[in-house]
Amino acid sequence: SLFAFILLLAFPTSYLVPVAVGFSISVKQKVLGYTQLQKWPNVIGPYGLLQPVADWLKQFIKDVNFILASSLSMSVGFFYYYFYLFK
Image (cartoon, rainbow, N blue to C red):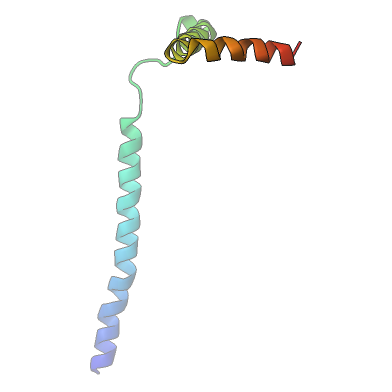
């Protein structure tokens, strides 16, 4: 009958479309993940021994730039307030 024919055509497409969408999303995520891989080592120094020094230096430079970009009086005031609270 016509109804059975329509069901046979409708059900495979109703299952294939979500599966195809899922696979395409999975492939897209894999490709985007592979673009994030680094080709060079992400550690500093032999065996990563200088990594803490590099991290400290990076954070120090960020903090100095943040303080220089902000109001100097606010920075000094916060410094004294912080050490007054926690002495």
